[in-house]
Length: 286
Length: 285
Image 1: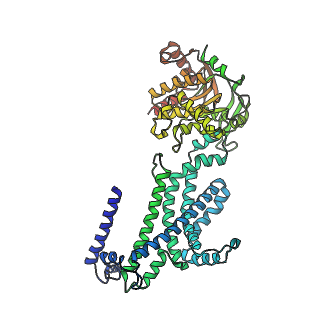
Image 2: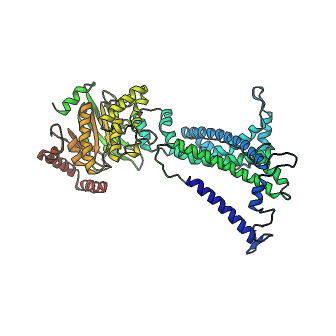
Image 3: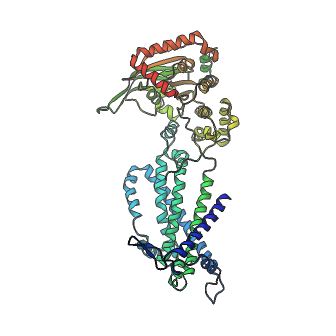
């Protein structure tokens, strides 16, 4: 409850700062010490908060009766499902990779550098590739749907923090715990299931938080670069085309993206609460 | 009937609980950092016997315990536990172990922590729950079965760890300074509890400590060890009789035995004894 109130207060504060700068800042942007860093405050760059809010309730096109907020929410819902799916796939792959790396030193030494390198590949370069590979795949006569490429790209960004965080957690098991399991003559698998994985949970949860944000970015960017319709990424592009005439509408899509991020954060917070029930909270590493 | 005889009655294995023969343990053998942790160790723990290992740090008492537990292998010599090679005894879970840290798992309730060794022995749910509750009653913590370990005090956590070590009904209990982190009052209480519990369950115990009164109060025999290289210098029999309680701590014989052990430790060399004292003071803080 207190958190919700704080959230609304912060939101109002952001709106107030926005309007304050808009009324005081230079119309055509400004320079500080010769650097052009002060944003312009004209309608195109910074529409009024009120205008953007009311635009949400206008119909999207004159012909159709659907209000913009409905279109944006539908886009959020579409992208949310892809992002959750991408996160689920990415987290599963990430945990599996971490377990493999923890089990086999060879895998760890061979794989870890490539995982780091994989994250430096620009998503925009990768997206058309994945889409075209997917288009050629027809496993068991089943056609690869276009949205699956978007999920794969979301998962591609999401798996990395999970695998690194989980690996760290698996290796942070106290030596005494491992010795105790050894005194029980427990197998590696039993030790993993009963000690190492549960002990890694406080490391996995913050990694999932990073992965959720990465999945959202991945999905939105992949929607744009694969031309996938229906999601928030597509709306940003579509509304961006007419932004010089209608900047408020572009910002409604940006709001949608923010809502998407917020919903993912809520999802992780709920999961955090669920898996950490009854546990003593340890300080999260930063 | 003495505690030891009482314990012996329970034991299925009629021979010795532990037989250590001519054991040598060398770390980093053949390198400049070579350390002779243990040389020429011979030790027999009779079944039902309570043996304390005491000595200054670096004397290898913990290493000896870990060798008996087969958490590490000897460089030479043989170790027989319950009549089998130490490795087989570990695989058969013939012993229970407790460390200085209780080492309970946060994500399990108290009772499920005690159940852990039984899960690994593939006991079914109902049977292991019943056994774990029985163990918690033994350490008088049954009403905390549903609590989480971190909600318990240090002494209570250590009692849960002992319940866990005893859950699979091992005939041998190996303990590495289990009360080292507890305050003096809790410590004395836990010592009395440990004697009661192991006498009831008929368990042989090898107990590593650096506290002279603790070693004497608990043990039938105190094994005094010296460092660099680690070896056994003296065996002190403690005929204090049973049951041992608060009065025992004020018994002249108790003081006599404490003095005997202290002098045995001093015999190791004044420097080491000083070290022991300094460490003791540091630990208390």
